[in-house]
Length: 98
Image (cartoon, rainbow, N blue to C red):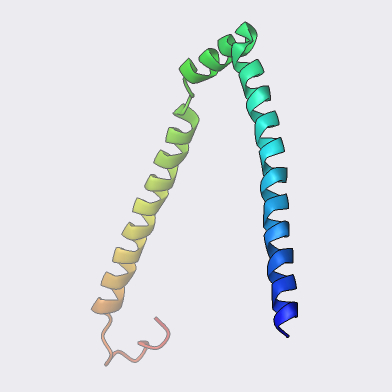
């Protein structure tokens, strides 16, 4: 049983070391690609253009305004219905129909 535990520990350590080595290779490749991209003047110009670009939000603002208007109308209808319900007379013979 003791031998099995040592073998398991060795296998686990070997697996962890293999993972670390395999992680280092992609990391170095990614760093190399990023360095090449950043040193490219076209890439730098494109990124500067994207960063300084402004987003047109007028359509979104109009949509928000329309939804706010609809919400106000809904609140108004709700308030009016609540007033009508409160003004109903339970002694009226047509109370259930209203």
